[in-house]
Image 1 (cartoon, one colour):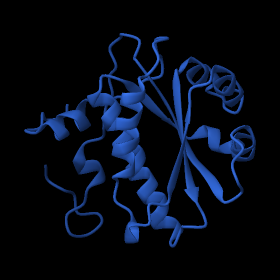
Image 2 (cartoon, one colour):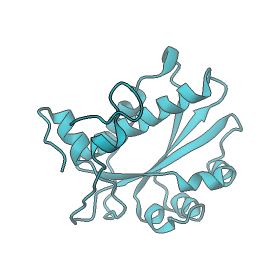
Image 3 (cartoon, helix red, strand yellow):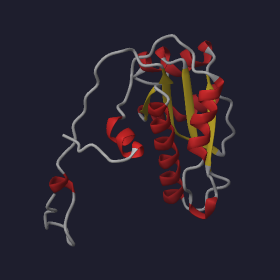
Length: 180
């Protein structure tokens, strides 16, 4: 059971859950801009900001993208998708840049939670990178990293568990268990 944090940020981190079912209510332009702004303020090496985002709200495009993943119902049911890409022309270190994009994605998901929206990070769609790039008319320099499905959550309880810190954290050296 997570310990409740003492700050709003920690509370948001501990309460965020992946949301896979959405109402039909569209996401406002204001909320989309807040989400994108949070993403683009993520840290990046040399402040190179290697991410590029495509906002997708057109139902026909969402339907086409839903055919690029085993999770088609999640994608097709979302009023908003944000596709995240690595711009390989601005990339200076692939690993660092992918980490930066991961930070941007997490910022956007946490912002969704703060706004009362739900979201889920879709990775399986990466198996169809070329098809996604074709649908979104992306230049070859853009490499798909993820797609976020975002919207107003269908009301229901969402729970999650995590391993104990003592199972994943070590004290000074690998194998020396961390004492919580």
